Length: 220
Image (cartoon, rainbow, N blue to C red):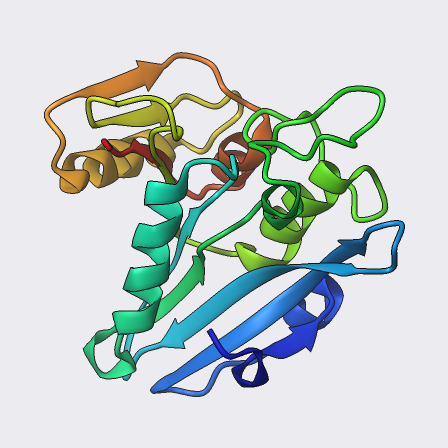
């Protein structure tokens, strides 16, 4: 992907962005930098269709070694045409780019322990790197989404039987459960795994704000 097609923004700047009807916009959202001064960015594609509709988040790569889901979202973002879209689709092919830069599933230099954006208790724009990843997602990139799809896949040395995760989140709004179950069924997998309590991380935070979110575990 040619970087000259991307706009470089901070998460705060991205929150102020507006998207014209019938457009496809590409961004690199700054997360932080390494001790060498090398900046780390989260790639984001925003497609606003020609018709009204919901705002939907589709992302992958919270665990950076799940390459099949990352590749699937990259391909989806490349092929998506605004003329075929109703509403706004926000696409993040690789959420945990700091971990990807280290060729690790999670960012290895978090302290005091390595964190996971899928289960992290809080986000922090000035915290450890994984807190910054989560903060960019829930406070900027996926903010105000009405639905969210969180794609996962096998690690490089394993095989999954495809299934869909749905999560019950403490304090979620009454209609979130119904909309979440409908969304999970639309994925089309025969197995839907119901996780009884998940109030943290990307999925938990979005659902506590009224955004039904499902995690898709793809196969090979």
